[in-house]
Amino acid sequence: MLDRWTFITTTLAQRELHFSLARFRRETVNPGVNRTEISAYNEILFLLNAEKMPVGTRFLSDTNIFDVEQAVSTDSMEEFGGLLTVIFPAQITKPLSIEFLQIIK
Image 1 (cartoon, one colour):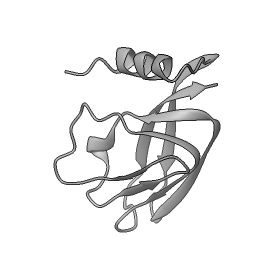
Image 2 (spheres, one colour; image 1 turned 120 degrees about the vertical axis):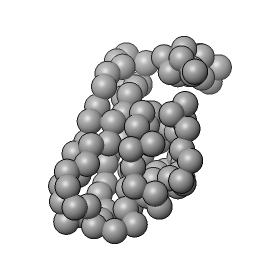
Image 3 (cartoon, one colour; image 1 turned 90 degrees about the horizontal axis):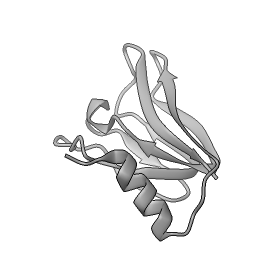
Image 4 (cartoon, one colour; image 1 turned 180 degrees about the vertical axis):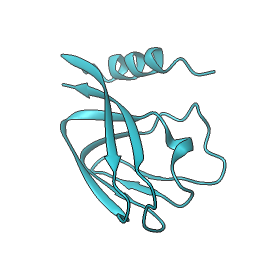
């Protein structure tokens, strides 16, 4: 099993990136929505719950594109920066939480 914190700190150290704050961030998507935008400027968002997203969900940011497929590993550590757009395959029928580890540079 992936130790997420070790993975993140090692990845940032390899890039010689230093951060001032790391915290949990949750974005809630309301029913009836099929697209949302999340601002991630001057920060990095590491997606923590990809396995809970509907199959076919697409995450698009200035730094990464990630499509949720049928077998998403719980060890997935996709990262995003800039403007993150999340597109769902259909309108959400109940509230959905997207969870991130937020790294502020």
